[in-house]
Length: 416
Ligand code: GLU
Image (cartoon, rainbow, N blue to C red):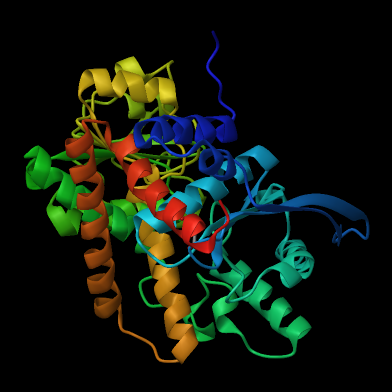
């Protein structure tokens, strides 16, 4: 049988497995298998050449029982409604496992931002916000950055929303620039949360991080900050990194500043001085202690799982591993920090950003990181302890923790 790579089918299969272990009430299970609300938009945008191009956009509010829905917006040529549905489900489990009082949502636009001018990107971002404006808000649904979106795009969306509403409401969107009410530490937050998870995992696995090696797939906001942080924090050597154009390798370790300078000059990591090229496939299969997928879904599948040699996989991407690959990793005894635990630092600091916006008083980066560390350490051990107690793998354990919390809120509201 060929492997099902539809991310929403995968998200549902993962929930089904957890529901079995939890002996979840079938009515609750049926409710949690589907998004509560979704919005589909056709978005006409005036292009620089005077033509009009129509883009397809989505916002899915998967579940808001625990609080206002929360989740990023992706700009990607391969975006589909099922990808957004899956990502919104994972946001629901993510906010629950991190124990922040929010639900889960996700947005997406089918587009290739590399092919858009800054002006076109701004008009598309503002038009998307005009479409979702009536469905978002501090106590309704709060968007944020994700793949190919950034603080500037959040700033345009915030401005469009505030023009429409006629008042300032900084907490309607997170990942904003600092000058518009962003939080200190939000840029590195997803990677930083991953670092706290890796630190705790290394303790339970007896991995000495100061002599460990790591490979990182993806060099966007998350992957690049993971590279930047892991060596100064733990002494771990990053031997390979990649972006969508290719990878680079150095047995002696890749210096972050050198790679970042080269990327700033050329737009790619390949051909960085002092490194050898490496394919995406070979990067994933390197003999390293820690593998950090930090790109997109479906990177570790039945095709390559048997060849993965890392001891620890820290999933900073959303959905990088298929259920078939999970089975292989379980057999091989590879420890996984599952995506919606490992990358929950981003949304956790987004929540801190909403809190700070709410009382218009801002914390310094040390305070943010201290509070993030506390949340991540608690979340990691809740999942790890659950895995031990129920004798299940860490992904199922993360689902057990998250689904019980969401189900409790649904029950208390009397929905099911
Ligand atoms: N896009 C990030 C994620 O997948 C952050 C979401 C947020 O901050 O709302 O977790």
